[in-house]
Amino acid sequence: MMRTVLVTAVAGAVVAFLLGLLTFGVQATVHPHDVPLAVVAPPPIAERVARADSPEVDIRVVRADEARNLLHDKEVYGVLEIVPGQATIRLNPAINPSGTQVAQQVLTGVAQGAGLPVEIEATTPTAAERTAPLAASALLWVGGMIAGLLFVVLKGRNLRWLSALTTAVLVTGSTAGLLAWWGVTLNAQALAFMLAVAASFALLQAGLFQHLGIRAMGVLGVLYLMAPAVAGQVPELLNPAYKAVLWSWTPFRFSAEGLRSLMYDSAISTEWWVFGGIALVGLVLLAMKKTELAGKKAQTDRADGIVDIGVDEADGLPRAERQHTA
Image (cartoon, rainbow, N blue to C red; front, side, top):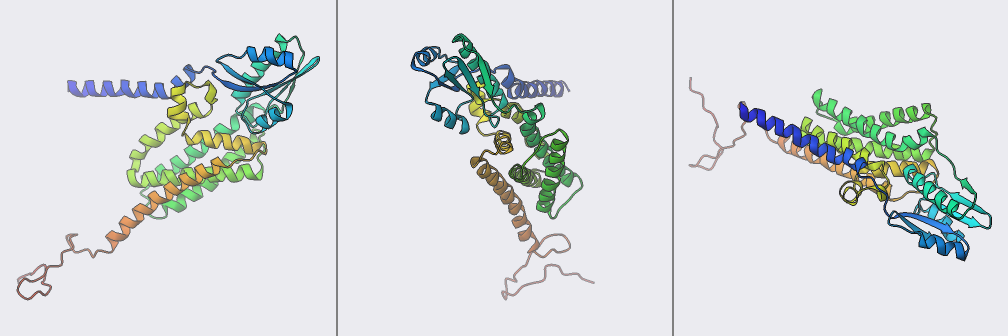
């Protein structure tokens, strides 16, 4: 009895520690390092700005056209353009808003240090638009997870893939409707991307539920708890360990970044490949189960569930498996 008490108590403490490490620990250790920024300025000011570089920021002094290309390609979080008597901060709304907020604060300080008035040139996302990419990603995951769990609980056997795809369509529609209610407008590309994300999530979850049953919640639930805490952060603000171990691979990061880019008409490519790969893994998991079932159905069942075709040792002909005497 005491052993059970000790084991359960230790298990609870270990799980609490690991979840804290993988979720709240991400936010508790946030600190900027090497945040990429660009500055366009005349030589005397440019030299002063370059000397002001620090471990927290990586300031690049570049030409105006190069700075705008870097901002468009999301290689810097903000651009400060200085001309005689004026400083302009340019931001890209398709970039993580936490990153642009850091960029705006740092670049405003640089301009004020040069004694210049600051003008901000950017499309400012609303609170709903800042929330939408990560919120949509989480809702698409939860929708597929709940549908897959119910399929197991209700003892569904066939057409699991159809359940997953139907779930993807309906969850995408409900999520898009919720975002529209919040005032977020999605273009056709963003909607198509949301559907692709929902389908890949639902297929992967269906495959895991098919092989693990309810035990799949141990994997899917933990992924849901830890991934959004990481995906919403700027990589340059994360502790390097969290960046390498969690942020680098979490699908929530790719879905949130891809949707944010498409909301502001930016092109994406890597994200399509990521979710195409996830969908493929889900389909392979589903197909593996079907292959096993097909092999089992090819066997003929007898009354006791054993298939045994015996061969008579004397004449090499099949013999009866059971002989019943009167």
